[in-house]
Length: 268
Image (cartoon, rainbow, N blue to C red):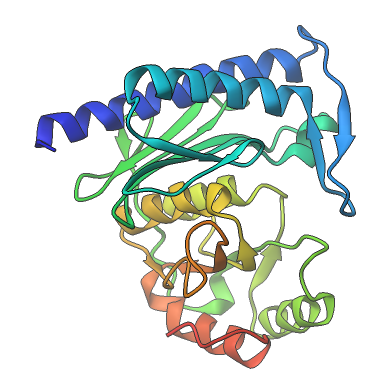
């Protein structure tokens, strides 16, 4: 793939995230009606809007890149040497409750390497777009992770869903608070990662994230100068894994706290 082809893919990903977000926003604002269903786990929701937005993304990708595979939250898919990883609406729980903290997330991964990440927040009309070796931007302005150098000054996002170990989650939260950090969970992992990339959060941790939630945001953070743990780990992309990302100066301290309060392999 030439450099111009790669840049064209990145531009397409950004435009597609925007168009998908515009469709999702029509559902969010009530212009299009939608039903809500449970996926079978506690507080794990899906809506007709999720399905419609993912179909839109899949149709556009299939038309433009017919030989690439697609792995999406709602319709699944396969992992290949060239795969697009899609979350049509990350933060569905917020979305169905009318809370304005959700996004569209699209990543392109080639031979196991994250190459492109696009996250669009329709509520603020912010497009976070990054490409390997090209940096990261928000609405065309370059973004960088924060310069935070101490947990005493840190605002950390710690994701939680009911499949996670509650005692481990609370133990880590207590350790972070005792270490002086402020800890928040707005409820949309991909968008929280984008906000680490642009310096609004200083770090993010979640014991397990699916690839459609994590892939785009991790690429953005790396391109914005942040440090991330290996992802997805030994189980492979389709399974996902543990996510730790932070401003470089606090990464090691945060990794130590995570290691002391979790039941998964070492992040280092």
